[in-house]
Length: 261
Length: 273
Image 1 (cartoon, rainbow over the protein chains, first blue to last red):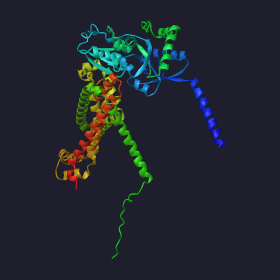
Image 2 (image 1 turned 90 degrees about the horizontal axis):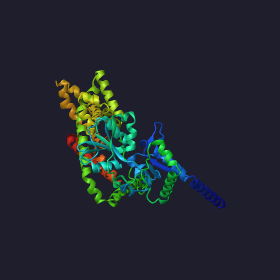
Image 3 (image 1 turned 180 degrees about the horizontal axis):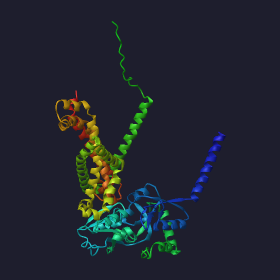
Image 4 (image 1 turned 90 degrees about the vertical axis):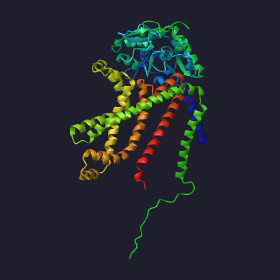
């Protein structure tokens, strides 16, 4: 009887110390896509790199937590968050009302406009509904660009792709008249040999907030308000202490944060 | 006169009460039953009339695309499988080697890879395809899907056909030859009617596999059933989008299964006693 009691005490003590140790070394799992350069991308040897990754690392340092990264296909990224595969999505996810029904968002950590690219020898003059009437536009599905394209270019054929590289390949192959994506993602691709075929056609204007949202935020499971507040504080901190600008300048020649909102 | 007792092996009598194997059996069936009930309950609780009204027409359209894609591919594949099966059974080493390589490649690589190679791979040869005047065909995602699927299913169907023809005993060929029938007549009137009974089930399986595999075309921008489900999910972030599509596939497969069973009962009437 006494031995059993001792074992039970020892076990509970061990559990307690373990719990304390875990609280100190809290690990946050960050989900990202890995197919959206320069924001997040998988290198040939399987490393995640990009603006999102560096921002997430800076935020984790600021919040004094250890972070690990999980690469997850874009289509399943919200269900994977809800299923607890990771604790936060830092993947250039635009803050939209539909998404906000399923997850909570932090403040934006950047905001860049949506743009269209087309072959260099295109006959297209602009990016209005009339300009693109009867044309084929490629967009990655489950994105704000896709929602905008399918609501705006109703006289065009909208083709949905699993992610940006496929839509870019198909524009280069000549199956598409134009593609719509984030201007930074498009510019990065146009600078590579594969993107030499094409150019920026223009940026649609206006870019309605009800479709594009205020910018890209970090998605957290519903109800975890503490984590949202921590992230918001950390975003404010790295904006103030120059860390954000350092990362910004590493990737871009301009300020991707956009106006204060 | 001695009477030799014949020993007849009978199955053991049914055990009474609750032996362990029976308990485990009931428990396992119970688990599956609960699982099925859970899905049904989920669908009932999550029933969303708005979702249904909004996306049901799109699903129907997608269903049409899926069915026509599979139907066209199956028919083209069946036509293409005849020369391939002939090559596989040929005594000519060159022909049989060629047919073997074809079947080996298309059965040995994932359909997903083949579809990608046709759509994105051939797509990067646009100037060459334009000069030979084939670009109009490979420009369309639907045609690319049909092309890849027909080539793939032709390999499987060729093996089904070959296996079925080879399952008919040699004596049938020899008997027909002794009656003075030439080879083509023998094949058409004697061998194929027997072989196709054997082939029916594998053909049914291949059709079911194709229906399910056709979901792959959603990633090369064809809005088939799966493509429409992805769209619905993209707009609603509601997991129901995928549950409903699973139900639709399940219903199609169930219908096909019964259809194949019905056909088999009809064409084997002469074998029943």
